[in-house]
Image (cartoon, rainbow, N blue to C red; front, side, top):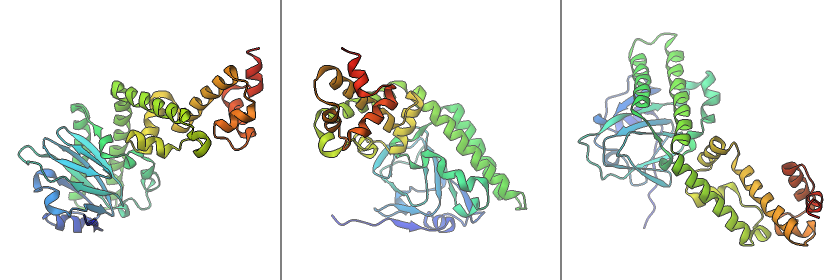
Length: 306
């Protein structure tokens, strides 16, 4: 099957034209109501749309699917997604629009130029999350974000003056700060699902250690782990940090130390042999990591069992 390239959309004005909407009230920012659209699918190619601007969306009340990166999410409930410039959005195009509501906030990076947000906007990790990692909002949270977006819309539709840009950017930063708070809440409140992820993570790491891949491939990379879990690297990192206080790399290292302790206490292998079996080219590197994690050298740990 022939691969269809995404359609690149450079400006918000171009996006409005493609979506069959009037010209935006401001060239660098726009709020588009989903109720004003046919569907995203009717206005995009099979390869999707690749935007040169930020795409922040809250969509609810529609049996439609939106493809974001390699993932698909069914938007039966109100959720938010955050797409950075250079990412691809595709619609499944099977939805009915009877109860469609929500909005899309489009922000050209030029709007943020020479503001504090320009330097920190990509520090918000949720711009690298996949659609299956969307933000699920409570009714109260939805009311808050809707209010912020209404303020943005009112400000850019008013007479533009020297204060307009900073006020608009402040509202955008406020929206992103609330999103960060709500994501943190989501990591905590979706306890069962998140702990199941951690259990799967632990099994993947242990199975990798037991397979002999440590000798041939070295320690598993974070990208490998996240792919096995069908999660983005940044989402997995944030989830672990929130629930365990560890990074993914620290989690892997802790499991490695558990394996090392087992070998040191139940086998007669030398430290060098254990280091090799655990994927270390040099035993000094293994000893350094072991001591950093346990405050003991591998030999001292082994001698404590004698």
